[in-house]
Amino acid sequence: MDPTAYFKIGYGLYVVTSSRDGRDNGMICNAVMQVTADPPRMVVAINKANFTHSTLLATGVMNVCALAESAPFALFERFGFQSGRTRDKFAGIGFGRGENGLPVLKEHCCAVFELRIEDYRDLGTHGLFTCAVTAAKTLSDAPAMSYAYYHANVKPKPKASAPTAPGAPAKWVCKICGYVYDPAENDGVAFEDLPADWLCPWCKHPKSDFEKMQG
Image 1: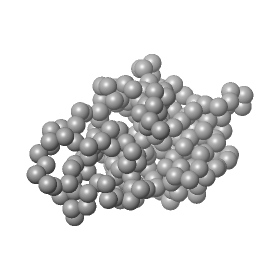
Image 2: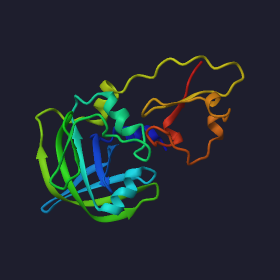
Image 3: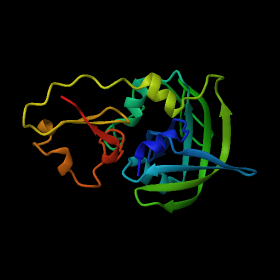
Image 4: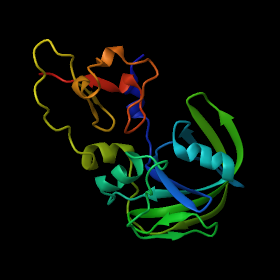
């Protein structure tokens, strides 16, 4: 199985927003697709480890904000590299609200879809939400951000790391988000010894998306 083959599938990039008990949240998502036109329906897949997953199951509604190519890496750090369990991701930024009361990004967002969850399917690591579109609005004519554009133009290239000492366990870097796993910062546990179901702490991708750093 060649995991890099999946990189050839075209994706957009979105911020899925939710709210529960007065607490707003948002997360980066690339698994969003329209599946029917009449009536309009979309499917959204969410990793079950994400705080958003349990919120959506409890509330039954979400907004999907389509990101524009102008979205900076800082936006991906805010909504993708920290957890809504411990951080208010909307603190300090301007945002509005849709007709359903959920957050809508004011900047770097070219369209928004308001969704009502109609069906849920457990897919193991992820949950698949089938949703009715209750509202849709174009916010700008800016080109929508694609996964390929993000990797080519937005995501910083991995920074040079200090050389690994002779005999020390190697460092590994996530090919998706650039997170570097350094055994020296993780109680000396070698990457190869991590559990098979270990996930990148930033982007939640599996061990198969990491590569060994040279030097």
